[in-house]
Length: 260
Image 1 (cartoon, rainbow, N blue to C red):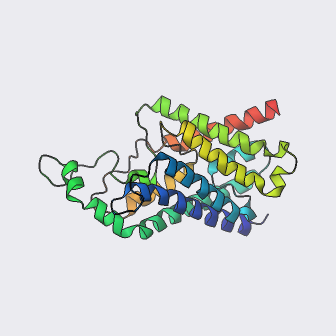
Image 2 (image 1 turned 90 degrees about the vertical axis):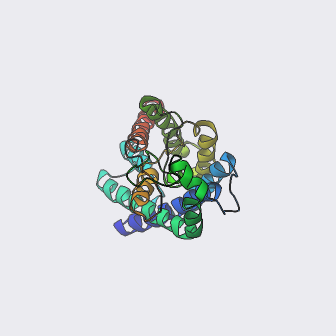
Image 3 (image 1 turned 45 degrees about the vertical axis):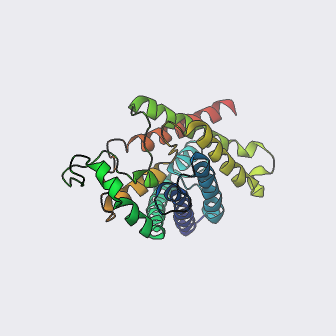
């Protein structure tokens, strides 16, 4: 596999993953969206379909689309360590492109939502206006771009991300145990189903990042975009959806080597 194959496959595949995944979060969150308040089922299935589309598009690179997957495969010996920086760099850049496309697709909805008088009043209820000197820990649309915990407990949040990612990476590593599944293309469909399952079963506490690029790239975009009243990007939490998935991937690789 050439460096060009890795770069283009991971860049475009991850961009589509974030475009569709972040897109469903925007659709459910933003006022003046036809899917407003569609709920958690819409989000989990939207992300599953996003994985499906991104993975098939990125097939020429192996469709990792996730630094944790790349890390787990490298630990398992399926990926050369010299290729790991290119994989991760391409994924991070693709995630940033995808997040920017979400903003462009929902530009009008972002403006309407963030300038809505009810939202503005809620950000500073005493004055009825936004205090530009106060930056909330997590802004009102940050959830469209990146994840955040329902209960802010670093240890619990980290453990949740480790467990969810370990389940994902272990499934990917064991695909080859089922004859024909890994080479038929059906394996990609199965991975998408597993992502839906992780979202439904384990996504409630932290929003199931299970992918450092999926969280960090869009978080950077949120910090850079000229969004009115966007609030903070919650950088104090940002390390959890990076470290947790990498530890989970290492755990999955260890289990795979020992058990299989």
